[in-house]
Image (tube, rainbow, N blue to C red):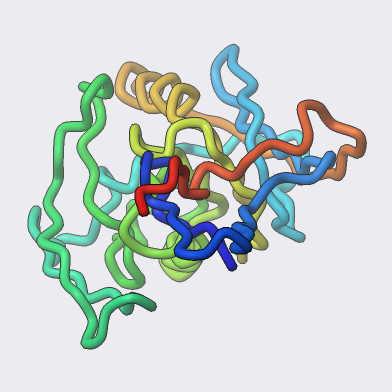
Length: 220
């Protein structure tokens, strides 16, 4: 049986029989790096996006908070389908000052939530959470954005995932995200670039447990 996907919380895996075997997700010895480049920084992310930005060109960058459409309030009620809940459960989501990220306050990025005039031909920096990672890229593309950098929040830490995004994109860690948001906050006209994703084999360490895999010990 599967060990569960309740993130690395202790005592959330249990078995009732001595013969039960729990399987968990782990990584392979390959990566798909795509770099976010800005200022004097080059941050390694992951992506499976098949598209790329034009070469030898820096793109304006904007956080999704600063690019939200005028009709998007500070609070939104979001209905999200959950495999473990029927009917759908709801989140009261509002802009929250993230711990250890004082320069970043951001609402959820949904389809139709971004202002095309603020996003067109820009790289939009989004925070992971609430809705699907790829959906955030769809929202950026819908608004005319050129690319997306997806940054983890404090709860997702250093777990980054190579997704098949619909536009040039990369997924970076929480710590790297703080560096990028600080750059956006402190720079009058931030500009950057996202490299095309490539495949690297025989990467180390591998395998290691996925961040969403639940932990023991058995409580039964």
